[in-house]
Length: 527
Image (cartoon, rainbow, N blue to C red):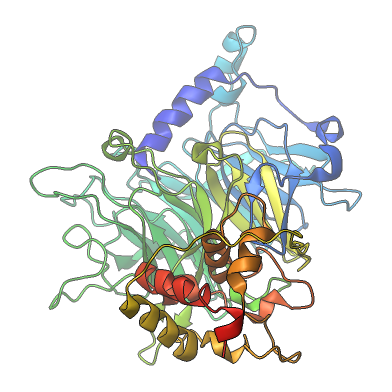
């Protein structure tokens, strides 16, 4: 994980008092109607509710559903919590401690001496996986199985299966997330021993593979600076996030992007000589997509089939914790603070490609209010997101229900800025022909008032667009409607018919030209 996350973690561990929870009802913390809309912004048609809050999980790092159908939370310091929604109302009213590590999260002035006597069995725990009704944890330098020796529902024994992995030789870099592949073997990402080289250990900066008992340990893929989490698709393809370097010096004069990589056996992904897409002649594998620098890409999960619409399926959701690197913060540059989605498409050469799009972000207007650390797809097809500092867990579902925005009675045809003729010609071309796999606007938006048109007529759009949403100009309204068609549904039309790819298919100049053209489709000249 990003090295500065650890600094935040150690600070908060010292500041947060804790209480050991064996089985505590969280019902008193239940927010009215479980609503999270005031906290989390998601695309139109989706709804965010709170699945759990008011708990001190001691800086959570991973969430996963266990074989019992309950959601489990792993803390950085090593404790494991079981969340139970006994009444089926989509809110976990009970939290049980499945494994308590006697860690620093539970130090108070009154119990500091007592806690000092307790065993600290796990440290820097950042990976969690279930396999054959067993639970595995990745913590500093090793991978272990947690065992419930007396079958009382609480894990009480740590059984290491692999030790001596490269851990924390560079701040925050360790063995990270774990996942079981279709071959029944366990995979783990391991960070580098430096920010951007050189390498010192044959098992660093790599994806490792082993048998469930830890035997047969081998390097599966190499050249990855800090692959924090990984996930398999149902077809057995492996994907991993990778964090970027942040120490600028004579050997690295810029902050590179972060990456999503399609992981193949024996492949090299370039670190420490290549960041992002490789230059011509370099044999390292190119990333599926490049994220913004210093987004701190963390937890990842794959959404296959479920109630989400097609545009939000068959791809990965990535929790981006957000910028923490000094080189970025000191320049007032901040990225991430969001959950992004990357649709995955395979080309004729068997390589994956996909551009990321933001899915969930803070609704408060303050990016750092939302530090997502992990995501997981529930058995119900919902997306679960856990926030690092608050330990709040969001549940995001899709209903498709979007309240239409009624036009006001008073039209607002604000003057449009003058644009060169060639811009309008470009806009007309895009309107009639589309661009880069994005269909032409005219194919759905007829200008003759045809009632069978899939989209509303755009004749006289300037008058209507400037009045639909109070305080929003016609240009702003049309731009949002193109980039996010379901933001403001027009009554009588299904906004889901409109592709949600124009933000990727059109450049900023293209978008400006298209908006300029459609806003000049006057009623009398619309043909």
